[in-house]
Image (cartoon, rainbow, N blue to C red; front, side, top):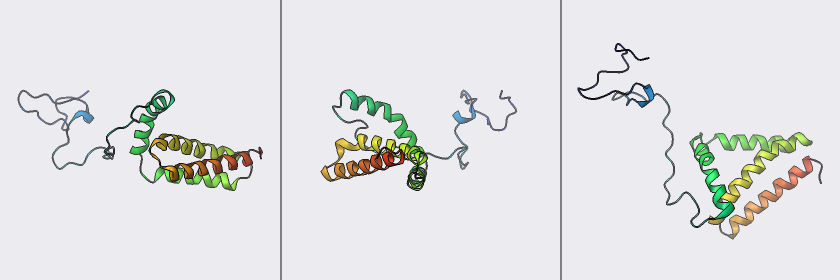
Length: 145
């Protein structure tokens, strides 16, 4: 794979081993990184709800990787995708509009469930109202109401 004449490998100091994979090597001083630097995770005391058991614990553990993945995406991507899906759901009056609303509904349900323990009454009422609106609107698109 890498030959001794490879200029990207550099010459190691005596007694030091240079990693053979390009991503394992440290960049040269002043060089730009090969891939964009990702945002660090937000500081916090705990990632999971303290004392959670049963379903909440299982959902939080299963949601850890998707949350980290979503956090690494550009900040503007998820709101744009959700707004486009919501607008399609509002504009298309048949079952295809309902299909476009389902990912929005699933995402809002997931985030509401994840944030529920840390919310006050006002936040819980607001999330319940948004969920009720989305469920009723999706039902009208599927012809259930």
